[in-house]
Length: 237
Image 1 (tube, rainbow, N blue to C red):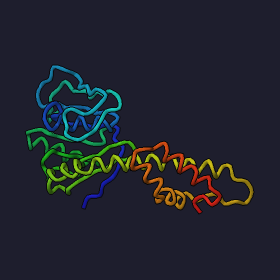
Image 2: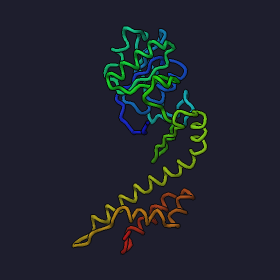
Image 3: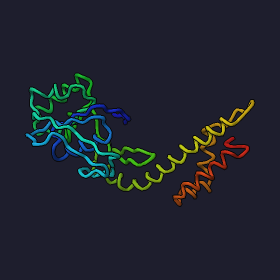
Image 4: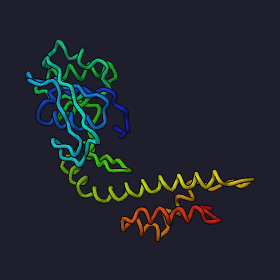
């Protein structure tokens, strides 16, 4: 059984990340990992891959770089004598090598070292799967068909994107409301218990006027209205 997790990746290593699906994974990982190292399958005449700020260009997801990032490309091509050294210090390893025997060695070594590994399109050499992502301000959603049908994961992502974008805006607004609650509680004197966060958030979220403002993307009006709810004598009680 597999359970989805949000994990920190300090160093990701991608074998054959200079082309095709391997390059797509390098691009995607470069958004989230602190460092990405490419171990090429064939000799490259460049030492790094630059991903400029803005939308990704190699993958199909609607993902963006907030600033330019680079992935280093190792000079030596992947082989049975250097893969262990390349993996050193990695949190996650991915491979798109055509050499199954070398992929088996990479997977076995990662398993021995407790490093998560994904050999692209090779289920028996994977203990970690890439999810189809919707990453918008305020919300990150991962979609998976549990390895059954990648096409429908992609289709679902495309169909749900606008809905998740709107929910991301709601999430950002409620973060602001939490700050209003904190400010209101800081101003209270005496034995007053203050506003309970969850009930107050629920009161704001379920208020139809607030929801209408958000649906019309009048976010500032929604926040001002939410502030008035929090400031009311009964607040969220």
